[in-house]
Every structure is written in structure tokens, then in C-alpha cells.
Length: 203
Length: 287
Image (cartoon, rainbow over all chains, first blue to last red; front, side):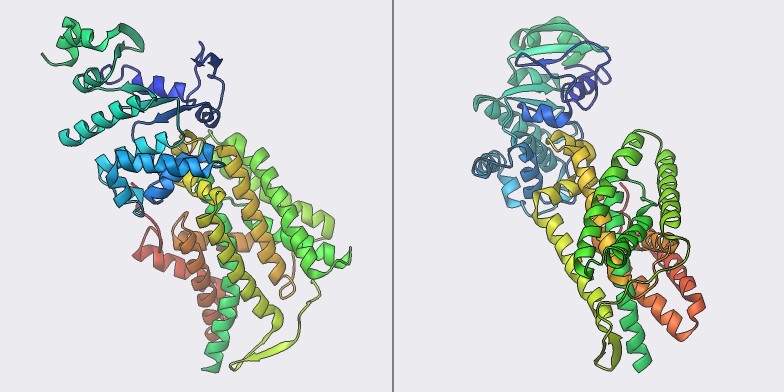
């Protein structure tokens, strides 16, 4: 977590390969990935659900999900199973599967973006501000699903301005300021930390 | 009435060519976000290759057409790779200039190899046909049929195949496409190949009817550009409908008023439609 402009999105985009680091390295499962193109990184099992969702607005919900499984296009039976799971997580996507993605509400689009990122069956899911601008009820639903994705065996790396939500559903937290980690620790401890309370929880 | 039917028929034939060429242009626009001004010259070169294969190598019309389409597909891939890809992260004007450089190169190349004068491909199907009072040739009917087949095949390719879906995905959201693991470079290559190959087929189909000349690409490229704007930038249905509208407007204006002014009607229709609907017939609001 971190405030606006702390570097959360830049960090996530760099990990996903959209931006290239000037120096330093990024490793994933012991392999250096910072010189790889985004499509190679996805096939290694690292998937980013980006800020602003970046859906394909004129394609149907179904096609958006199907393209999410692009790196697994040779294993259609598995893709269908993953899609069933995504529909279980977000039943509304199943109801709207033939609708263009651009006609969904903000919350539904966020659900679709998460679902699409899951379709590649990542080892690690990067979620960049998944609750931004959403109604409290939707935020709660998305928080529950993030927990569930994690229980199903996917590592989730979450970026949030909403520190309350972030610390409730995660195990470890890192506070980012001006591109540097200024504080880190188990989430329950950070929730009690005086600095965090003052700066991010509004207490 | 007979004149009217005859002109509408001519318009549909002209429009078939415009529609196919414009679909190729609009697909590439989706990927590059600039119009490929050299597209009309792909068309011209496609006609010349078919002409060359038929007259110099004595190959039959159909295999020559297929070979010409394959060669143009390769050229499309090459042009994307060496002309447009290095310009991707540069200001758009650089890609404009590159496109214009490409078209000048292609036109000069054809001029040097085959000379500035026009050539004619022997018409493989010159017999006249009388269809519901319209007198035409088999070749003209073939142009219309081939366009329909090509458009249907392109539609199936884009809507029903994974490869086609990736073209739409890159056009609608480039970063989103990268993030689901699509190799954007490969999609660009495929799009250029499809676009150049369809232009070559359209050109080869009408080459036995009209003359083949080095300047045929410039005017057609310009008209395809009109069609794409008319239909809405990046819209495939728009390019198809726009192509037929332009063909029919041109034929009717040329037939009833004056053939000398047929291009005036084409450009006039563009101005009129854009005045009423600035985003084009099928254009989406930018937002």
C-alpha cells in the first residue's frame, strides 16, 4: 500500500514487463524476468490485473475471458474448467457472458478483469487497485473473492489505497513511499502500527 | 430505369473493390492507429505481379492471383517490420512519413521495372452476360462474387478464430492484449499480411477489366481512405458499407451527370456524411 504517486502501479507494470527497469533485476521463481516481454512473463505464470482494467470493450465477456487464457489455448478442456471456476466466483459474469465488456458496470468490469487475469492459471496474481472507485458492497465482494483465490492456491500480490481492506485480507504488508519500502511486516501488526494508523487508516 | 439498374450494378462492382481494400486498411488502422498510406500501392503492386505472372511466366489467371496474394502477404510482413515497427513509440507523424516513403518507393519501383505506360491483363472471362436487363461480362460478375467470398472469409477469420480475436484485442486495448500474453508483434505481422494479401486479390480481380498502371494505387488508396473515414475509423462493417456506398454514388453520379466528375461525387459524399455524423457511419465515440 501507499498513497497516490508512491509508485505502486509503476512497480506492478514493471514486474509484468510493460515497463522496463533502468537498473536492478526482477526475479520470479528463481528466474530473471525483467528483460522478458509481457507475453513471456504471462506464460511463466505471472499475471497482472491492471489498474484501469484494460478490458476489450467491444468484445463479449466470454471472449475477454477466452483471450485471458491465450497462453493456454492448446489446452481447451482446462480452459473450460477455469472458466467455470471464474463463473462460480463471479456468477454475474456468467449471466452477462454475451454482453460487450464495455456495457458492464464498473464493479462488473473489475470482476471481469480479475477473471480474465485468472484464466491463464497464474502461480502469482498481481492485483493493482482492484477496489478503486467501487461501491462498498462491491468492495466487500471483491475482497472475499481475493481471499478465495488465495485459498485455491494462487499467490496474490495486492496493491491498495484502501489500507483497511488490504490489511484485513492479506498476510504481509509493505508500505511504499516515493518508490521505496518504508515499512513492512505481518498485516495484523501493521494494522496496529501507529504510523500506518495515522497515515493510511485515518485513525 | 435500365440506365439506373446498369449504373447500380457498375457501382456494386466498383464498391466491391473499395470494400475489400478498405477492410484491409481499417484492420491495419486498428493496429497502427494511423492509416497506412501505402495500402493503395500494395493494391497496385498486387495487380502488377498478377500481370507479370500471367503475361511473362504464362501462368493461368487463378494460380497467378494466389501467388500474387502470397507475395504481397510477405511484402506486408516486411513493410511492417522495417517501416512501421521502428516507428511504434515515435510521434505519429514519423509513421506518416515512413508510409509516404514506402508508397513513393513502390511506385518508382514499378515505374522502373514495367514502365510508366498502362498494361492490360488478358481477360480470362470476357463473355458477356445478360442478367435481368443488365449487360455485363463474366469477369465483372466474378469481381462481385469474389468480394463477397473474401469479406465472408475475413469475417469468419476475425470472429471465429483465436488469431482473429487477437487482432481485435490488440486494436481495442494494446496493453490489455499484452497482459493476457498476446505477442503484439506477431499480431501486427499477421494483420499486415492479411491486409496486403486481400488488396492483391481485389486488384488482380479487376485488373483484367481496367488498365494496370503505376498511378492506380494512389487514387485507390485515397478512396479506400475515404471509405474508412466514411464508415468510421477502425470499423470493419463500416468499411464494407462505406465501400459499396462510395461505389454506387460514383457510378450514379458518373452515369447521370458526368463521368468527369465522378470523383467529385465521391469526395462530396464524404463531406456530407462527416458533416452529419462526424464519427462516420459506424464510428464509435472517442472516450
